[in-house]
Length: 300
Image 1 (tube, rainbow, N blue to C red):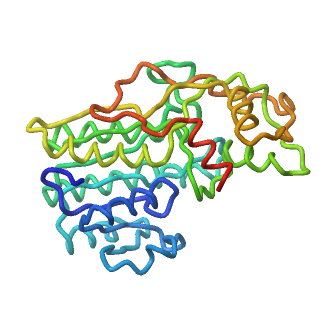
Image 2 (cartoon, rainbow, N blue to C red):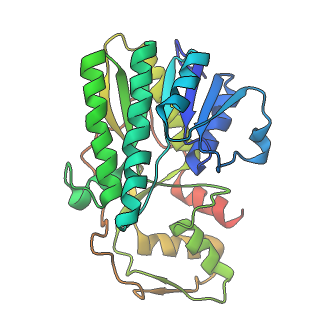
């Protein structure tokens, strides 16, 4: 499956969990792929020497972005790179601004200079605290929204079509992130008690294959549409309470999880529900049922 008019892709964030899975899919779909990454980050072993991937280093300067656009002509930029921090201190501010605002703006400026018209952006449901249209949970979410405002300028001033995908929690095999699914699986056979909250959060969990499929569909949509697009779409599944997710892990594993429910307090701005007032990406729906995804994680 390939986008209608898209052959060449520039991908950022290719070394992250979502990025590596998307990169594998793009390779399988025979796109011409270039990635722009930090020097200290690495691709997985099965991709690092792939000849279909052009690898460039981003050092924070516009010159390092300009180099890529000068050497290769792109049909679309997929922007996944981000610094995710649930909380921050004052020393983190430059890193958050540079990663989540400056980098994306440099991409857009070079798209403008090279007449690249398609941009697929990545945002987060953390911009919707208390299920509000806009209420950032933390500074990370605020920087993501700030970049979206910059994106609107480039759209209106230079006719860049964009689709922003708002991702909910995602999971899958070989996920190095120490998120909820990691701790729930760890608690199955761990002698260490895992402390979690009371589990009243009602959240949506999307399998990584469905997340990847959303980006492929977004590429098709943006390349086929004759109008200049400016769209925000949610990538979410049915929601479930965390305490019910615990029960699901126990039922499928046939074991009692070694967790202490309620031992950890909720955060000051704990996300208690997934935002439910955003349009779903047209043509996309989750295909992996949560029960099947949990079984896959348990059997990993």
